Length: 243
Image 1 (cartoon, rainbow, N blue to C red):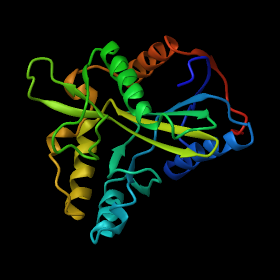
Image 2 (image 1 turned 60 degrees about the vertical axis):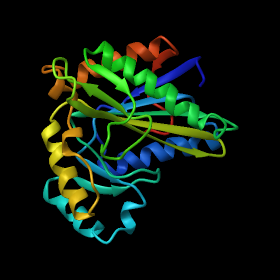
Image 3 (image 1 turned 90 degrees about the horizontal axis):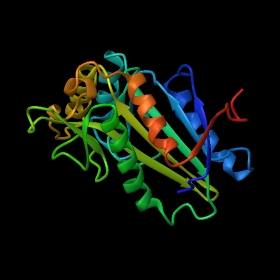
Image 4 (image 1 turned 180 degrees about the vertical axis):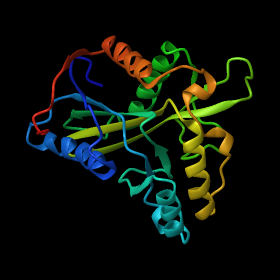
């Protein structure tokens, strides 16, 4: 990973579920022309369930999408892999984009490095965070981040899912951190996974403040920026591609 300068774009409000995903891809595409510099985009999303492309081929996919809409979540299909993941305004989405002439070379190492970074950030925010999957978690990933209850160690909740996309000129690493309102996440994922007949343990879904009452999105955002600041020289600026 580049450890020099990094622009920080703190998007003040969501553009809408689909438009937010589209902007990430537009910023990645900007690495083709040099309009996108190494940057970090941070925002609080609209209620969204981002399905994987494998989900869209399942017989129950249409029913799953309707279940999401019924609960106020916009169902979308992301271009990265994995299964359905959910986030909402109680979450923080972090898009890290960098130009890179060989974006595939460190793609697996990137999962580990960012997993460690976000684990450190959640720990700084007061969460007992661990890198690694929980058995039967939603959108299972070897480098997801989970939190552990401070007094009941068998209670573990997935808090961060990560995904990445590469093109010939750069990469996008996207992470969603669920901080508040975990019940809404559990409910919409339960309905969606049930419709697609996918097994998972609903107890693995939730938010950071299910484990540490009082932790807020603002606190987690500050912790993320502090940890990033240990590795990059940060400067807050709106990217050229954003009007």
